[in-house]
Image 1 (cartoon, one colour):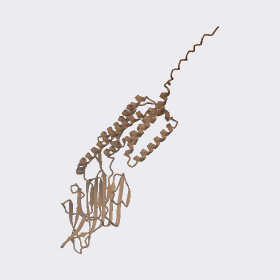
Image 2 (image 1 turned 90 degrees about the vertical axis):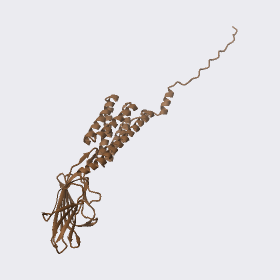
Image 3 (image 1 turned 45 degrees about the vertical axis):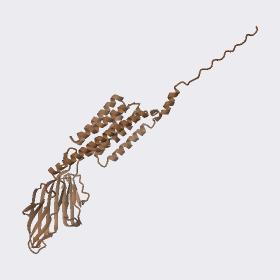
Length: 420
């Protein structure tokens, strides 16, 4: 293969790279646009991230009010995941059933009026089944400024058990703040979370559970403390399916690497099989690769991501292999070319579905491919495959007959007549 052909193939690669970068940019812009526009819509319809703080308890009397410490907390939160998709993005929406029982003690030696002020996670949210019961009896509740204020009677030096709860919708994460004002003492605390999903994670500043066990398809997570000083929240981050927009944008951004590996493999395969391809052939092959990412970009926001990937991969392989079957015929080289496309386009792109393993998968594929071509080309004479220009020039020059100057005609010598 001549240097001119290699330069033409490189130019095709550069043009394809520019097209992929433009496509990746458009996908990124579409994802940001839908994320900002639809994220607010989903939050408004379904609910935002939830943070429930411990209620504030007070004893009213005489000249003012006295803060009441929570002597014990018994809390449960059950989560049912209900992911919602809008355009190129998934949103981790959930339903939470929150229940809490608090024990408070009247420090006064006389009967006092106790209050509980519970601040809702979202003042504009919807809370189904909310009620407050004191020692099993429902008490009146006043709602103002995003808070529910319940009033009840506390016996002298006596305790009361206050139960409350609700069911609401949220998105992305849920947290419980056991201490109302930063770092504080939390006594006799118990919180149990139950999920119907197995992929669990915690906020960066959250506290890990003290005990956990499988519960059906999900987990039961427990936090138990007899007495702890902490200001960190206890929370849960909801799992989110792969977002089609960012995933397709990443696959498209790294597509030039996929094509580069395939072009190198194609050059080696054709060199070892005696097949000659013109740079125009490489141009159509690059277009077949680009068709995969173009289809994937516009199918991913319409149908299931895995189905979109399958359709795009089958279309691209059909274009490239079908085209080369006409160009090179049904030879063994065609099978090797099809296997190379499957590796460098399909498997390379699908590795992005497994976050954290993409680099390892690509490395393994490259090493195995390197081993294959090292064995395949070990006995190849590269001087015959890529002849140097100087050698070619010398070869063409030696075939030209050397210039030989015409020989000088011998001078005829006149011999004088000799006597007979």
